[in-house]
Length: 259
Image (cartoon, rainbow, N blue to C red; front, side):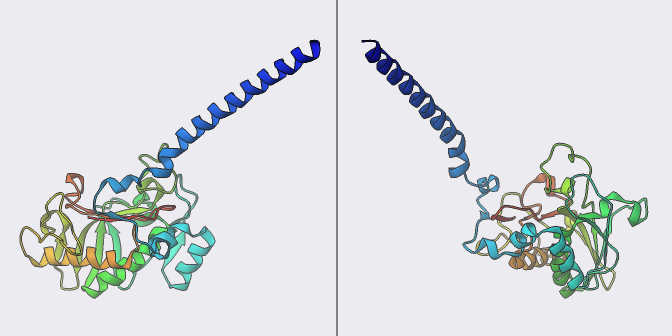
C-alpha cells in the first residue's frame, strides 16, 4: 500500500506540474499573440503599405546596415561628412560638411556655427537617404534645403534608440530655395488638406495649383518612388506637420507611410 500511495502522490505531482506548464504556455502565447497578429503601428493609417519586396527598399536596407557599412557607403558616394563624438541615442552620428548634389542642407534660424549646433547631427543612415533626396531636389533646381532639426535631445532618454529625432534618424524640412532665389515653404506653399492621399492613384490635388504646391508634391512623390524613407509626413497627414515635412529612416520595419 505504501508503494501504491507513492505512485499516486507522484502522479498527482506530475499532474500539477503539467497543469502549471500548460498555464505558463497559455500565458506566453497570450503575450506573444498580439505581437504576431497586430499590424505595424503605422498600419492604422490606411496609406501605410508594406510592399512585397519591402526588404529591397532603400529605407529597409539603410536601416539594417551596420555602422561600418554605412560609413563606407557614404565615402563611396563621395558624401562630404565628418564623424561626430558619441551622441546620446544616435547609433552612428555624423555631420554633413558640404553639398549633396549641389544642395546645401542648413538648419533654419541658426544661432551657432554648424559644428556647435546639435540640430546638424544625423545618423549615418539618414544621411544616405538625404543623399537620395538631394538628387531629387537638384532636378528641380533646389540649391538650399532648410530644416528645423535632424537630431534633438528631447526624448533621447526614453525613446527607443535609433528612432525619430532623438536617434538622428529624421529631418524636418521647412523651406526649399531655388537657384533663381525663389523660396517655397511648406507652411505657405504646400496647399494641403488633412487626411488626404499625397501621391499615387487617387492623390488629392492641392487646394490651390501654384508653383510651390507643384514643387513640394514633386519632391515628396519622386522621393517616395525611391523608397529611401520609411516615413514622409506632410500637412496632409496632420496639423502637427502643417509647416514641415517629417522624413525618417527606421530600422527593423518594412512598412512605408507617405502622406
